[in-house]
Length: 350
Image (cartoon, rainbow, N blue to C red; front, side, top):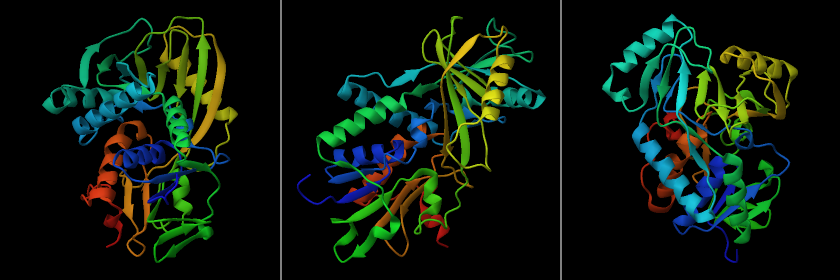
């Protein structure tokens, strides 16, 4: 990059990388700063896309728009990079108790849920479901690691990405914008995941992060093509390899894998299937989901320092939410379009 960047983006996970790409596509000069020594939750995440979640089977707000944006962006990147990234997989959702039966019956009669909820079945040859199960549509997963590798190579080829650790004390507000080390830019945007709660400009935001552990396993038993969701989930990668997840821990916020989570996930796996699977562990990872207390994103610029921005709070739905919200933020930056009210951090300024 010869000219000074207009936007410095700190954090090269899914949020930072896709926001950088959105801004580039709109003609913005961007410098993405990657700290290779800081673990990224995006590198751990399974990339699950699921419009209807939780025991109450809640339909994601604005789901049609979110899905359309996700499919448009990921398919565009698949063509650009010549690599399959978004994998559509139907989901089988296990009904675990009477409350979920009630929720299923209520949602199935709601027209808004019709495109997303399929048929009920009493049993399945692979899945252990004594209370029955049903299918979910418009589900799948994003290969987040492949996407990040491709985007980062693209950025580096254009001299739009550097590897460095950013200390907040090294950032200063100057008449021309912001300065970090010897670099000046119009603005700086932090996409730091759960570490945003430690950022001096944004530590007032109500983060609610949770540690999660995910395993990748291989089995000799042929796997079904669909995703299985019984609180925990199985995501088949191919006929023998699958991802198993995910644990939740709101207290121990670190990226260390644990024996207890491994045992918890294996126990959940054995409970999910009719016949026990003989598996070998290929990978076991831990990451911290960057959530918020009101379950909405953190997007916008600091009320007193309008050159300092944030794009964060995507929780466990980053693969679904990032495409549309990054587009809205990029349009706000380049064209002055309004930010979505539900995500605008101005909601905490009052």
